[in-house]
Image (cartoon, rainbow, N blue to C red; front, side, top):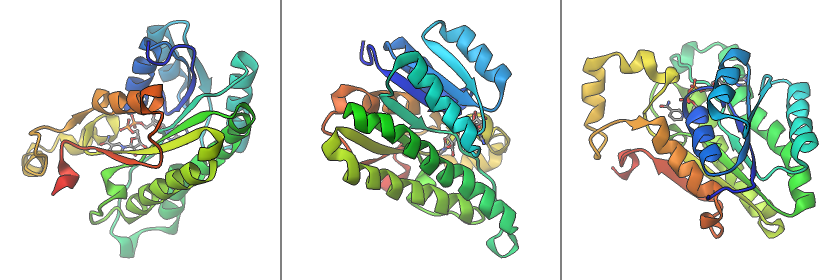
Length: 246
Ligand SMILES: NC(=O)c1ccc[n+]([C@@H]2O[C@H](COP(=O)([O-])OP(=O)(O)OC[C@H]3O[C@@H](n4cnc5c(N)ncnc54)[C@H](O)[C@@H]3O)[C@@H](O)[C@H]2O)c1
């Protein structure tokens, strides 16, 4: 198994890309803590995944919840090998009309919370001289589209944050990589993807001829989480059916 004996934390693990990644990690032998706000979603995920999975309910924007997540992992397993910074939110508005609260909320969840969790996970990783961060950014961290300036900026910042970890902690055996999904079928995109006319236009930008599935991203996470990618750090991996090859 590709992740035998590894201890993984996945934020936003109860749905979409996070849940698909949890399925892949558990299948490959990792003990996986799923963190998120919705206890019912986490519990049903744990029921599906079995004893290798554990649910920790909490909010990414609350320091005490992040402390509890790290404490639970350390008390249960004594180490943290992989952190998947996946929880995030997408919202839009024309920039000249965007409320400051929308900007702040997007930044708080999509980048500041990642900083807060990463800082906490780094402490045990430095002590054990190994660790592995995966950051779920977006193609909108690489290119920009209109009316989602806060999201574009937050996901771009996440890429640079990931590279910063790779530079600063590589010598301590800690890796960090960013994954940039294109349009993926999840709850986050369900309303958008219900617009068939718009999707027919957008599909033309995907050379591979389809949009993505959560499992497409989970498979990339699996590679970057495993020792098969031991010499890979600081990279930005689009998982986008060729969208950013234009
Ligand atoms: N679906 C796409 O097309 C797409 C494309 C590029 C990037 N992404 C990114 O992938 C990640 C996962 O999104 P998804 O598509 O699986 O959608 P999703 O809505 O299923 O997943 C987001 C998860 O984050 C959790 N979350 C939100 N706010 C939280 C908070 N304050 N504390 C704890 N958890 C919180 C949600 O409960 C949910 O489980 C996000 O970071 C998103 O920006 C998605």
